[in-house]
Image 1 (cartoon, rainbow, N blue to C red):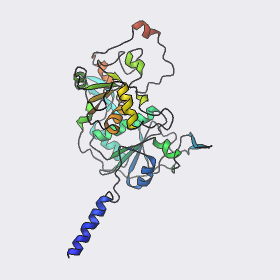
Image 2: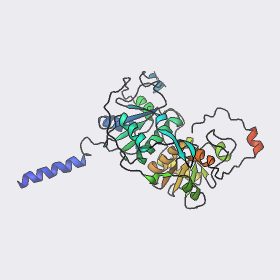
Image 3: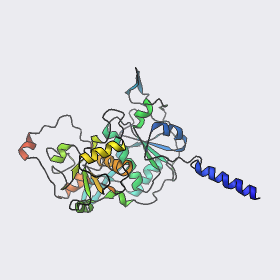
Length: 337
């Protein structure tokens, strides 16, 4: 009997050391090889603007390296989620604020429709062909965490990197059953509202990080989502395109590189901070960089960002004279968030 008990205990120890058999345990930022090894034990959510290339094969050019000429297909088993369904409008103090985090009920239905179950490990991907793609993924990641689900990872380089690394692509629409996913809790530690952001603007112990293009920060031009030009008082600038590589597949810079850039921009990677942009989209990329890669757990995202801030007529600092602003011609800029 003693030998039997010892055998059972040893089996349980081995079971625990192997990650509970089929249970996938990934880092916040994973690479394609990890995903390939764990694909049967995770649920992949592909966050896209449309389904244009989801079922068409990719095109490659073979030279010294495998070059992805045209994006197509998806990771086998991936469930498609349209980004337009990730965020929504909310009424705050009588004002309609766009592109906010949706309600618990709406988010539960979104994941259930995608076939996500309560204990699934979620992997989020996009095409990763642009900074916009990258921040679609980080915004979804942030919302999954916000609604209390911590078993979630983001695929570095997205589906583009998956294809370039020679992994199999699927062009078949996946069939899956309705999931049973429910929010476990709301993680208020990663979200900031206008009042908290206002307090941070006068608190030297909390950093405000503006991730918009430098011209928007300085006030030489503005997004259509903001009523006025400029930035929140005391905010420091860290343009979102500095977070990642410049060419597709878009990947986050390393931890060391992000630290160097933060220090160069007079932003402490260890000090509490709130990230913002125009609508909470780009800011999710900086939130991910500080909260997940640099492990600063005192990082929050101001969901309403400049859209809410300026529609509430809160103070804004502009460093550009009006005449200079009028003479500024914005060419080739895409207003992404």
